Image (tube, rainbow, N blue to C red; front, side):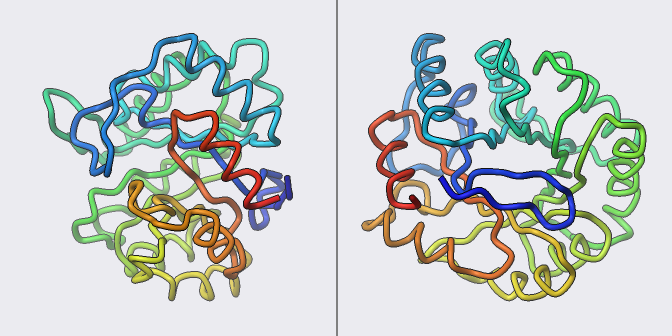
Length: 251
């Protein structure tokens, strides 16, 4: 699989990354085909296949239920083979999201994530935005805390998972990476890609197949792969066959 460098971070990742929200959460997801949580054996087989296919970027978050803990267990003994991305600022409890962007909460969130992931650092830490008023007054302190955690060696790259063009542009100025939604049904944030490229930053693309609604996944992935500043395309699947098909599409 093609490897790409994420901006100036030095991180090298396969073009296809694996999103793991379905490892630990089945509620409140806008998916075409909801699924039950997988067993440990299913996760182990999927992670093993991903590594065999050249997928080395794994994306998780505290808001993904038990995903971090289950991913940490599955990656035991293989941490040096992967690039781990997690987030801070959102948790999902009692059927809904709770947000806290105070610096102390960002720091405590990462500390808990490190325990669940069984590691002493994460490669990427993203502020997990709620999409409301994505400006520096609200998110500046949280972003500064992620940068401080990077300086401490707990994080290798700092980023922002945005929902608006304003938030993505703000993060492009201050951080290493921006995660954004892009798919053929929703290209509203595509204007950020040229901005990121101009600043030597990378984009991590989420929801590339529109929650399973994309009729031609291979064509959609190839389209996204050709856009400026795209460093990795994250897909969230529990199907080994589907994962292999997507890896082939980007080979």
